Image (cartoon, rainbow, N blue to C red; front, side):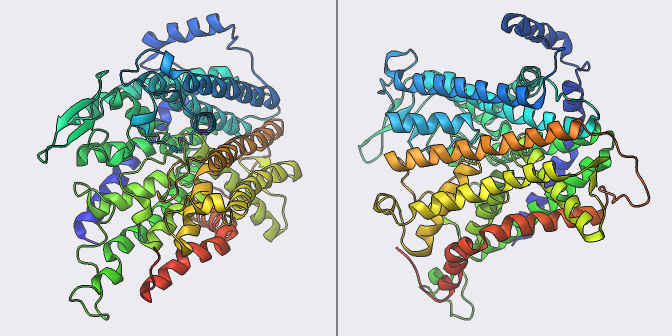
Length: 576
C-alpha cells in the first residue's frame, strides 16, 4: 500500500462521515412529515399526487397491507418494464433502430431492475433504446430504491412505536422517498457529473475513423441522468457496457470520488435517521460504527492484495521467487486514471452497498481481493448496504445479536425497549436462511450443468467463483459480476432472474412481519439488567454475529473458490 492510497481512502471515509448526520436528519424530517427547505416547492406536488392516485396520506397500514403495497407495485412495474423491452423497436427515441429484446433476457432484466439488482446480461449500448433506458430502466432506479427506503422506514417504526398495529403508509413513504430524497439529489449529482464530462444528449451514435482507417462507433445518449440515480439508488446498471470504467460514465478521478460518495450517502444517512426516529442517536451511531469496521476491514484486505499483485507474473521477469512481486501491483482490468487504490476502494464500496457498478474488472482481481466482494454480498449487504436494505439488514443482525446476548446471560432479550420473542426471531432467521439457501442452492444446482460450463470464462476454482459470484450477486441484489460468466442464456437468464426475486421479496416479507409484531408490543422500561446497545461492547458483538452467522455460512464454498485459488497461485498453478 502507498501513503497516497491510504490518504485517499481516509478522505473518502471522512467525507461520508461528515455527510451522515445532515443527510440522516433531513430524511428523519421527511418521513415524519415535518417541514423541510424543499416543502414550499414539493409539498403541492406531493398532495397532487395523492389526489390523482386516491391516496389518503393520513390512513396508515398494518404490516400485511404495507407488504401488499410493496408486492403489487413491484409486480405491476416489473410487467410494464418487460412489455417496454418486448416492443421497443416500435417506440420512439430509438435512433439506432435497435430490435425488441428477447423474452428470457427481458424477464431477467425486468426482474433485475425491479429488485434493485441491475444485473445486465447484455451489452446496453447495442440492446436498449433511449426510450427503454429512460422509461423502463432509469425510472426503476428510482422505484426500486424508493421501495427499499420505504421498507426500512417501516421496519424502524416497528422499534420506535409501541402498542400500535400500523407501520405507516407504503404509498406515502414511497412518494416521499422519490420526491424529497432521490429526485432532488439526483439532479444535483447529474449536473456535477456533466461538469466532469459525462454526456447527456439524444444524438445518434457517432461514426469516427481511427488512425488505422477503421470505423469506430461511439455511443451517445442521456447518460448523466441515469448515472446519478444509478449510484444514489445503489442500482448499478450502466448505460454503457464498461460501466464506471467508461470515460463517458466516469471520466475523471473527481467523478469517481463523487460516484463512490453517492453510493454510501443515503445508506449511511439512514443510520442517523434510525437514531432520530427511535429518539436515541447513539443507537444509529452504533450501527454506523459496526458498518464502518466491516467496511475498513474489506478495504484493507483488498487494497494490499491488489498492490502485491500476482507473483506468477513477477517470476516471468527478473525478480526472484523470494522477492516475487508484480511491479506496480495488479493493474490488469483497471483504468490508469483511477489506479489500484481507487479501484480496490470502488470494489469494496459497490459490493458493501447493493450497487454493483464497477470501475474495474472484478474477474481480474487477485483471489483474496476477489474474496472480499463475495463476502460483502454474502453478509447480506449490510455494510451500509443498499438504500434501505442495508439498514434493515443490519437491524436484523442487531436483533440476533441481542437474542444471543440474552441466551448467554439467561435473560429475555430486549432491543430498544422491545422484548425479542419467538415470532421475531423466527422471522429474522427465515430472512437469513433465504439468502443462504437461495445462493448455495442455485449455485450447487448449476455449477455442473453443461450449459453453465459453456458460459464460464475459466476452469478450476476461478470458474466456481464465477458461478458462485453470479448467484451471490443476484440473490444479494448487487448486480456486479466477476465478468467471466456469459450469463445471456435461457437457463441463466431464468434462474438468475428468479434468484433476484427470491432474494428481494422473500427477505422483505418476514422483516415486515417482524416489524408489525414489534410495533404492537409495549415499551419495556430500562433496568439495571438491560443490555446497552449503543456502546463498544454491543458494536463488537454485532460485528461478531455478522461475521459468524454470515461469513461462516459460506465458508465451505469460498474455500473451494477464491481461498484455494490463492494458495494455488502462490504455488505457480494457474487456470485458463
